Image 1 (cartoon, rainbow, N blue to C red):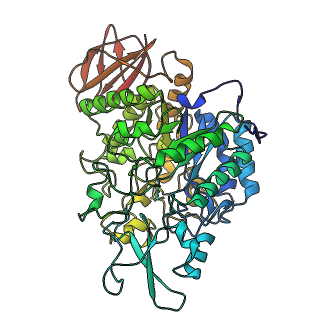
Image 2: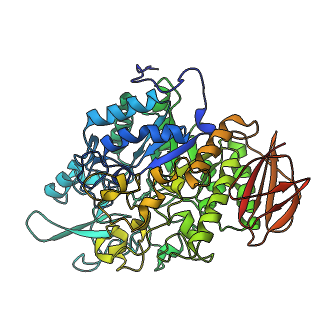
Image 3: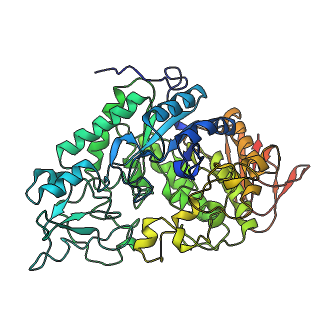
Length: 554
Ligand code: NOJ
């Protein structure tokens, strides 16, 4: 097997394996993290300058959402060139500098890979359109004639995740209406045909390009979507979004995807170091998710069942148990996540009544939301496995729920006629400083308006304040690195607790989380290490305040 010379070495590569089993991975959404050149849009230079913040926070790795050349129809998840950086984010030289600097700070870098679809400006797609219906280039995507006498109806009844039909009709080079093409997301995101060997070869080559650049892994976008059921059969229902997550759809979670990830695992094995594949796979059950992380496939998969769980002890316990049980047989670590760039931040989800979903436009009770968010974070970081943080959650940021419709850029907002698609609310550039234009995000404003008062939540405002959410995260990550019983592993021992309280032990560590709105008295399981809010321990008993998690050394 070819051993590629590892490009810039990852931290302790060769000495520590399986770093990802208990890694805390911080998601950077490049356009909203830090703006280095003052054009109001975050960029690689900004990220590079702020890497020390991530080292001081204490995370192990950084996942960068897409920075590739893209017309930005879906904020970079529409890639026109997988081997180039979009000029608005910088250059390949800047990407190299970010990777090298991160490694020098002991941080690993995971990049986003978008294999389900390209941009409609990708060279392959443009040529396929220009060549007309009989072009073999069209076989790399899903082009089909329409139904009906004049081909005026879409080839099947599939609906786009972003609303509307999943098909768009093309115009032939001679100007007449032509074939249709499939796009599970926006029309600017045509789906690749993964049955075509050229598509498979191309993505193995793209993996090698970035591995040669020295990245430590890939977060694989829509990992469950690449293979479509043979014949692209009708679903037979409208409102298919409601079926997602419960039923197996002919375009999601088809068994054929697993061969692809097995072949990618071989590509990673050509490289020194301990590089990883992380699946963004929305499947109906955690058992189905576990298929993606069998020993010869990916390393981790996001746990969206956990992300969707309410702040409720019984529900949380069921999902935690289910997740650990599903991962154990395949030997993969469980993962935990509360926020990302596609859902309302957890400080706002938990501020609202349960059951409203993960995309909200109501601020709810902010103090309650923050208290629960802090408690939920400590609970998550106590669980065995790997945890994902989304930029700004360490500041306790809420979603910006009152963005005017005219500034929204989420394509799903526009395709769903404003009924859905509130993802811009979690994508507002984050505050670094108390004052200044865009609160330290950059010198030239911010591509989405930041709310008044954002500076009070900034890194500057919170640093050194022991009651701040930022210092809570820093301390939690410090304790997580040093306390036996925190981090890797695949099991916890539940201990007796009153209704609404979660209590478990792991080696020399215990965690108690009160998910109720009332204080609860419990026997202190040991010496208090950290709490998500004020707690008085006097004697053998402790009153756990409402919505509070406590870590203990036992
Ligand atoms: C999942 C990404 O997280 C989301 O932001 C994007 O819109 C879709 N995949 C399509 O690429």
